Image (cartoon, rainbow, N blue to C red; front, side, top):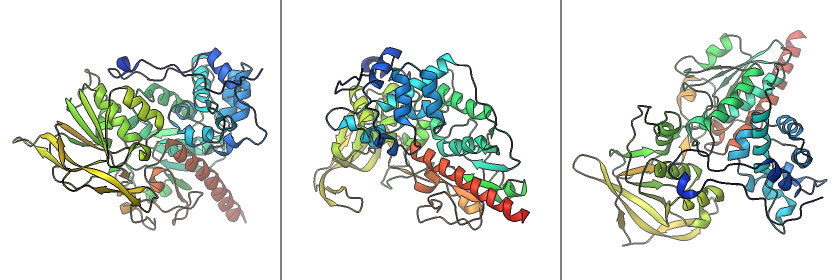
Amino acid sequence: MANMDPKKTPVPEQDPKVRSANFEEVTLGYTEEQAIAEAKRCLNCKNALCRKGCPVSVRIPEFISAVAEGHFEEAYEIITSTNLLPAVCGRVCPQEKQCEGKCIRGIKGESVGIGALERFVADHHRAHSSNKPSPATPNGHKVAVVGSGPSGLTCAGSLARLGYDVTVYEAFHKAGGVLVYGIPEFRLPKQIVREEIENLEAMGVKIVTNAIVGRSFSIDELFEDGYEAVFIGSGAGLPQFMNIPGENLLGVYSANEYLTRINLMKAYLDEYETPIKRAKSVAVVGGGNVAMDAARCAKRMGAENVYVVYRRGMEELPARREEVHHAIDEGIEFRLLNNPTRILGDENGRVEAIECIEMALGEPDASGRRRPVAKEGSEFTLDVDAVIISIGTLPNPLIKSTTEGLDTNAKGCIVADENGATSRAGVFAGGDAVTGAATVILAMEAGKKSAAAIDDYIRAKSTSQKN
């Protein structure tokens, strides 16, 4: 019998007062009974708008129907037929803007909890099944993938399924890209990322770490080594700053550096010797998901006061509503319609305050959002001993500067068509390296499309050579 409750089955969470002092996962996930109850809210629409809203085309009504019947392993097989990282997507995808945003149940109530159900299915499989994917029959062709973030992993896995010999080259000492260095443990446990990557390795994907393209080797050398195509999914790890006075003071971090030290280098664990300042008061400049992650990490690192300083209002915050809600519950203070003008330091060159000015929203800018305008004479200071800048990132220029014939735009992003093809034959690119900083699922979509385009390219080239 269908569950016509207009509201979602609530997902259990850690108490805010408890979780703000630990790095354990905030959202605890559904029980089997809760998952079945939520799955029964799905109307199983013939014209499944939810699937059309999914960048990787998960067969949503089908997997939810399987959950409703208690066939959890069948649901997992359905999801992984199109999505190679279900435990990741179930946790970090902005479902409210994608699949759930299209759900018919959302018209007169709350949408079906598609993301929570995807996470449940992936976690149930991890807990109850020891089955690993098997390698496909080799097709005799080699492809290199640069970067082991969501776009690179998805491209690699998709190609491995087609029988390609795929090697992923990762600059860091651990695979996972932004999934391991950017997203905090309390949102995405790293053990889950490791297990998703192990599934890809079981499919035959090889991963080489500590390999920096442009330093360890070049794109040209990959072709010389016998790779017939290269996919660049190197992300956007170059932080942007505001260029205001005081950004060179001790205690000023880019969000990338701060999160990498915490997530990848385990600064929150005493047994790891990772230098990071445990501040008492922290200002995080920015309003996106990365800013929320940095602010919530700062709180867990012991800061008594954490301020999110953002030049627009709550309605304009680009972060997911769920992340904002969690941040507020954990005691993060939002200083909205404020913009930093300079960072003040003490006689030892350490941060002691941040000066801000109040803003008002004027006419819309090119992005369609109302432009913030400073209010004269409204300057004020916040006493802080650390500042984290989270206003966006750009691709590292290393690959561009060491690769001939690869077009990039004014921001340093690789120019590629909708299928990932670049200006250089045999070189494909996707994810943040092409779009600039975006979401995990959009990077995965790019990796999946590029894999299909690489397969077409190599097949066409092979046919041409035979003729």
